[in-house]
Image (cartoon, rainbow, N blue to C red; front, side, top):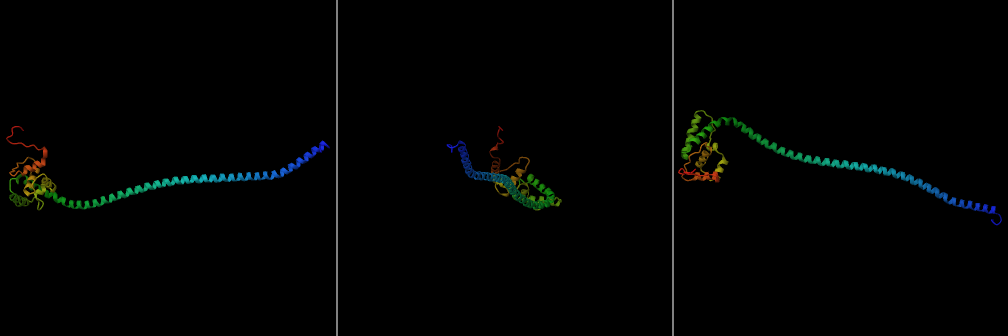
Length: 238
């Protein structure tokens, strides 16, 4: 057409271009529509994803909050359990104390009943014990027993002075622990020796000890130990 007429050739080019444009348009337009639809779908899905992510974030925050509450609750539970265990222990101790005090109450109640009587009987007990320390020492076992049992106690009773029935001056002046200690220190376990030790330990002044068998000196040495120093009357340097 260009050899025939340039205008006709240009027209043919235009027609060809229009045809090609139409062909390409028919191909591209659906693709563009599909791309637009895909883009719209992507935007919608992205929006949905953002909504889901926001829900997940809220849920995660809620989960973290619940975990924190759970940890706090577990800590409180552990503390309550520890406090409960401690209270149970204290309650057990208190129960044992109360039970012990209950026994003590019975003992003290019984003791209280006898205190009023003991306040009076200790007068006669003290008199016979003081006389025992002051005067009984020089005598034999038989004479000692007869003196305080049959003479002193009867005299106290006749004068109306209250005393414990069956009182024994040795029990007033010492107890089982004292006598066991004296025995460990070397004192013989017979009655006279125990009475002599009670007199020695109850005297306010140093008593004279007549000790032909050297039992007294053995006990005194065992009692005083290494701190004891001995001397003779004939000794010039003290």
